[in-house]
Length: 163
Image 1: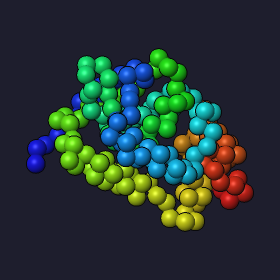
Image 2: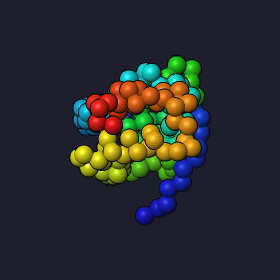
Image 3: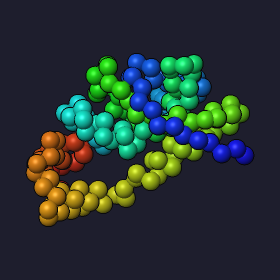
Image 4: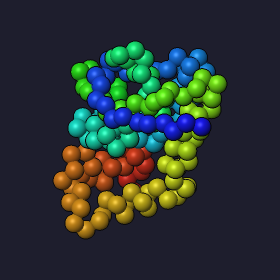
């Protein structure tokens, strides 16, 4: 097994593509069918979305000199539609490319681990949100998109009275 390397790169949004292998397998349709809690993503400032993408960059493979196909961190793709067309998107360019005979399995393993790690046990989400919103010294009320519990509840897809 060879070690992969990852190079951080900023690429215009227009140069990011969905891998044909993933399209043909229907993976994006299946992944898009997962009901994420977050709503109102369009209300989040672009800079905040870009910060998230810097922390969770799309993993890509080069397709020629300028284009890139997404192979990991598929959940980050949801944010791309909320950014202006000329935005430069942070990416991790993987090399060498994933061998085709294991490509789908590796991509699915990555996404399953992402989903498992991000999952919050039933009943724990509102407790976690409420406790994070009330941390002394965090000045969360100065947030551009989470300054009130109503905004937090709306974005998280929960009832404000539960927070």
